[in-house]
Length: 341
Image (cartoon, rainbow, N blue to C red):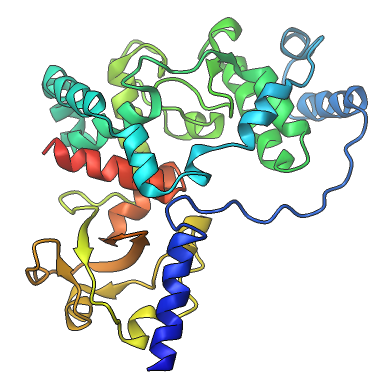
């Protein structure tokens, strides 16, 4: 009994304090002091030239550039890491958001049906991602991407990742996919209406309208198809659901709360139980929110505790985590998509 209680306390503490939903960022480790910015920029330019990027492009994009302090301030205050689930949902899934999602789902129904047929990702999920990423295309980001990525690449905290994204952004310009003055996005360098990082754009952006450009800034066809292509490549299974909200008994069997939990994938997956069959979860007393037994299924599911709420999530949930590795965001997309079905 003490063992069960200790494990349950551990798990609930992870849900509340680490928040499982607004999971804390990893501990900030000591980092080396970066070199003077001018020296760093010269070294970065030399590497870019070594990658085959033309000098003319680097002159246009890097000359006179300086770090932007506001970018670093935003990087330290992400809502996904500072709000619990209920706070996050209250902020993101407002009545206006739900009404707009329903209206956009109806407006683009024919286009969404074509994209769903080709990629296998449900239309409600595509609308939900679009809505939460850029407020249904109304706020795709206005910050020039190159200065943003230069700032984050120079910052030692996650410099290596953003250095790679900066080279991807320069490659987008080199390919002629978008003009420099139109290469804009979020404070983190995410691009266009689906808020793709530049590396994701290079891998997953689609030209669904057939105009010869992968335009995730203004083409709604390309936006939806690009999101669908991303999720498909991250393991979305056609016809399967993402998961469901569930009720759990006050005391779970030690085996159900086995520690350690999953280590693979993004850091959010480490705040989930190991996957088990639905039959096993039924034996542990997990039930639907109405108190009914879980339906029989061949799916495996992992348990996610979100404060006072609990969710049994499947492989498609992992595909959504691939889009944004934060349970708060992923549950918001999933719950909004359910409201559109």
